[in-house]
Image (cartoon, rainbow, N blue to C red):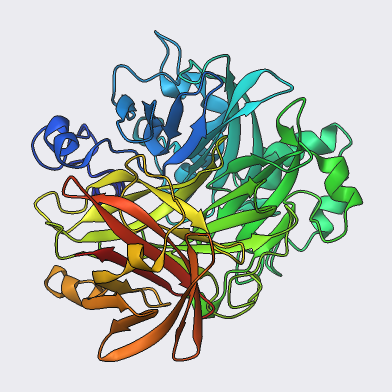
Length: 544
């Protein structure tokens, strides 16, 4: 009876994550409403936790959770490569092989945790592939697939790696990289070294190879006084949501983590794509196994913050760090935050000057729940984003979002262009990318009537669909005239930079830095603007 209840709870969680219908241990995931095409025709392809990358042949790809993936030649029109774990066309594993057979080593840690925590049999084990990321490793000449597996509601997680000669696979398992949730108990309930002991992770192998000493491992403050893994505020991470990136010198890095213990970054050995333990041991501020903490989960953020992504922009010279606050459900308030640094390992700060490790509500909010009047449905819980600084200098933000319509909590990918402000921040344009390029504007070009959204700096959520309107940012009528932005009965100075599309704006002492660019609304070209502020807010407007 208890096992059935647990299975049904897991199915509910799967539904929330994937939009699938699951009715018990023997159920197969299906679209929430109708067939997959009915949703795709409305909103486009669906990839949860999308990570964008550009293949060597110039094709754009998105990879995400549950082995879902898609591709495009223009970042506008997308084609599904794999719709998920139950897709017969999935490309992660070899033909004739199952996911569990191909990646048994990656799943072993979570299997042990499920057996110990939930007393599960081998037939009832859940198989997760979450938040995948792909990067082309120049030295290896391979596409490296980084992903994680985890037991929902715990920090029993593992990050692992696979490789392929092509972006669409098949991918072959290489090794596990980072574990979390382990303990140092030698016995529990009379069972010597239970399956959550650190020796069941790659730490045991690293000890055998002489990378670490057993005494050194057991002396680490990874464990609380009772010997359990410590992932509390400001402590150690949940080994999920990995993304790899290159720095300006061609060095390879990995960023990962979540609301459990914060976000960490570590150097990788490019020849293998695996952790560089020697570099971490030799560098100040690094844990010998987990790397360096760059974002501290804290009570002020309600313990949120996951889906980290770092990209280096050679035009501005900054590393941009994106993080999602809130929960992943449609009503749970996912929203994207931005920080930046001149160094890959930080410190990362927001536009208000807060360090991402500060015990305050940090992060410049890029987007939250919204709906323009010309849109049929509200856009809910945009998050778990990725960012692409393309070869032509354009920058794109890719994320998934949900809706308050007949599809309920289902999700689809979104691509919006981001523009650089005059002071080197990125601000996301309000309309989906449609091939536009920012060009210099004049005062005459920007004057007219607009619909405006001013995002709050907080995370907005509810537990009641009847109250969904309460968590959607309000819109208002606005006008640009005579060098001022007018809305709410007030006029605010808007200064357009000479020979540029960037501007500054003062709203009651809050400084906004933004950019103008045309966008496409209902098939027509209109002027839009976007700006981020030193109050960690974003302002959007689209011409009416």
